[in-house]
Image 1: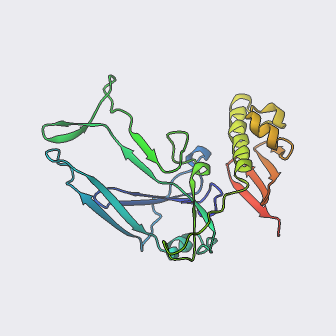
Image 2: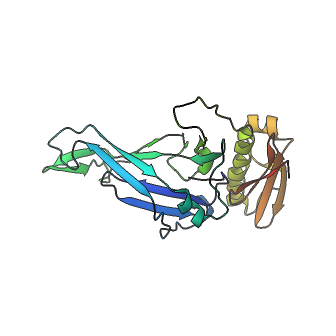
Image 3: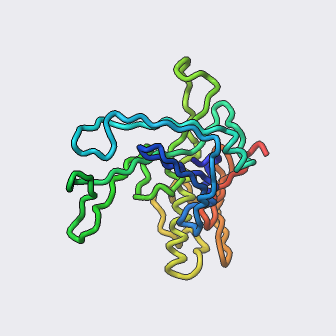
Length: 244
């Protein structure tokens, strides 16, 4: 969950069929050199698991399991004071993931299937919003959840698309290409022409984006339809509203 959509300061919550919870906080994605804070805790978190079948018993047929979660706003704002309870029509970035392993049964127990190298086969990852890689820690690809003051199911509420989404994706491409350029040349590119950008992004946003490079970083900036957007070498995506 990334409340402000800046790719930084986001939460992760994992739950299994035993209703065992693991919550953690990341200052920024692992790709930008960080460590997860496992001491992060949502003390008033409510979770419940429903199982149609049994656990770890291969002798019968199981149907499914599901989880229900209630995250108090107070737990989030206590850890992130700059985040407030969302307003009507406000949007957060969020994604859901389910991991599934290929298994076999040996001596009455489930075992992970192994490949020719003797190691377990890679897991299957099911996600709500496509990540385009086996990596949940690309917050820019997470989906959108829009909050409403209407009671769910009582009124049709329009969803407002992110009018600057394509521009933000272009800035994220610059971030990725700058990292690749740095790994090859030992410094960041000073001009967009030095980067290998998608033709669509170059055609539609090339004239809008300005690039400023420093020895240890860079900033790419562009005027969007909604705000002025900036991204740096740590994939931190920030904006300045035109009203300010």
